[in-house]
Length: 399
Image (cartoon, rainbow, N blue to C red; front, side, top):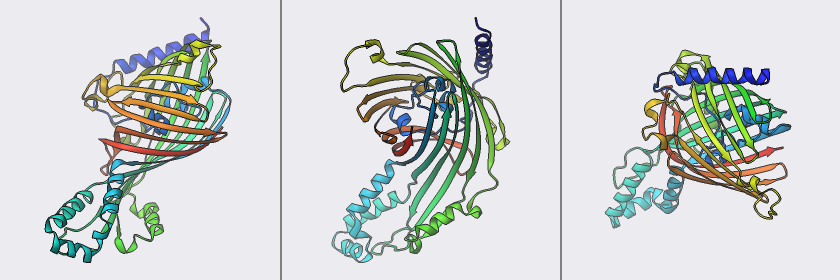
């Protein structure tokens, strides 16, 4: 066996041994990975099928499958179902936000007024999640560099208690923001015809905001609110920093079949408040491209089909985070490529997801709907599991 291949296999086996012998504990998740609309639509399953540059932080071994020069500039916006529910409620009851109209309804139909008051109280007690995730990346051969942010804001329109027949006309907008800035570098290594390896390193800078409040009189001045978000006085303490080193591997028996995985956080370090509880996490999967078995078969509409299955955290370092066992760890994804479009669907932790992509020349637009049980940064500086229905839209320039 080639010396470089033996060395790479020895490193991979040693790393796997370290992970497999680590005791299962409830750990914070590793440095956050940017979940693209493609990833969300395919149920999170993209250890082996991630495209150029994104493979650098999902599984650096996959960089060897898409060598060449690539650039990716993307902006993604996601919001949860509560935003849609709130918009529908406001549209259906727009007139009742006028104090005079509400008083008239209270005098003519107290039950309807009480229902509006109860519904409004419910909507103003929720936090509405909005995320904006930009990405810039470049790949040169099997070497990639990328920088991205994972910015999530919890926003709540707060209205003081309503005492009929009056309705308050001084709501406020409250927001709490968590921002992760990540820099990633990765290298894929071709080890013979079938073996692929890779190593990646990510650095993280994390900040949390205080509770930012904006009065209703200023709601029209969104520039002021944006200024508040970037005002250093509204961010808690100093930024937390850390880093992680990942090791990935793949076996491609043919163009139609691949298997492999990644050890995330094999080595990590940084501020204790951030890195305490981080443990190496092993995930694996298989990928199948059925059309590759039909070489020479004339295809007019369907250009490619990708099927992938991943299992997260094989050694259960997150412990009780996966209460339902294997089903909580299983991620299934499918993508069908037709001219200009990509149709996607998936299953993540038992929840269905779907999406659509459009590609023309270097312009890439995509969207996804998915239910995600994610670990989101909370105001206390720790992670907590939150399950939400998300809708994501992204626009990118890729080549």
